[in-house]
Image (cartoon, rainbow, N blue to C red):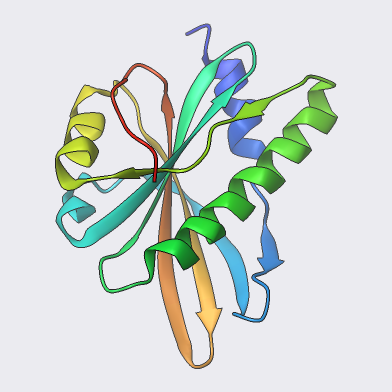
Length: 148
């Protein structure tokens, strides 16, 4: 078994099931699936690096027509809740990077260079709309991104 697998499983299991996104509606976990690398052309992406005894990237992908600061904050909430849960479970100090905006080239490089991408899908319910949010979990094998 890969030495990262137990830690990755802990990370996967620590994602929040649902939460209120301020006055902007409810966010609900829709499930776990294989990442859709074909969605890269139509999405913005914000990445957060999580560090404890492993290092992973959490990448939040959302439609190009959506507001980047708003969905960066949504990603921040997902990652903060996940890290709080994980820290409580492990009794460990976990570091989170500031959000990093990924341009199209960086998203594609990250997707191509990761040996494994795990995906959690969320839906953001706002007014009468359901907005899909894709969240990738990648071992931190890729460097070279800037801040959002």
